[in-house]
Length: 412
Image: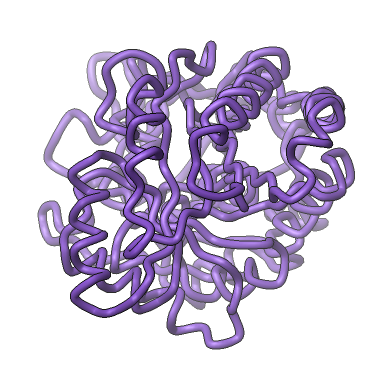
């Protein structure tokens, strides 16, 4: 982040006349004081814009689902219910979070390996669709459904023979704990237990965090064709083809945003070419990070400034116990900096920059929030703002580590 002006220009945030960062129209220092920073701040306006932008360039009949593992904060979930066409959960706990919002009667799918019997039973009771990850899970769901005297909604998650090229996390292709290998799907469909399971369709999730429109388009097209091939063996026509998502977020220097117009145009062409075969099937794109990451800012105060062998350290109240991903310990091979700034000097004409390392308050060298960052000269009490923190924040971090206080969250 050698050039603060260039970095700030890439962020959808502004400052007031005092140079104070504004989030959702409010001053960052006021937010930090009111909610006793460290605090995650989510700007609903930016979420609205992201969803609207995606809808504008995607096929009009594409369904958008929100994977709540990205951010299950209750007010945010309530807001998302008015923007998307469905939800994806990955535990009974996430399913319970949704049940606390009675206005949300949107369809729900339940994904993830290792679902316990109690979770399968909860999915049946909630009438959500279970994305089956193995033959064993299929058999357990059928047995529980029979015990309840119910038909359980179920789809097969297919582990495809291809992957999402260049994705940050590859979840399809090769040996994977996720899904049923494509070569095994026809046999399972031909022996489908129609007395217990109501066949819904397929989920094919190849990977996440890709910034390549070409790779995403290729994966989506391959997913549609594979789902159609497998549908020939199904006990009845498929209602749903969930082609995953994979759209990434440009966190690091040099990253460029996904060309969503190109992805949408390619998907529209693929769906149009298969229109006769999928006329009765809802095509679903499942996204989490892409919807909410840009809208989140993590604010934390500086409690100490020190020099050690020629290096300046800014020590903050927060750290990886709140935001593990920023520390580089959530999927990064080589640690890179998220966009970061001083909230109280969020201007575009700063010249008195110093190179600093930003670290958290934990007793571990893993607690790094920024390496060799160029910032205006900071003082104890100043507020560090870390951007694109709307996804995989508090619930993806070791909040109990060293028993520091939990952080606050707010939706503006």
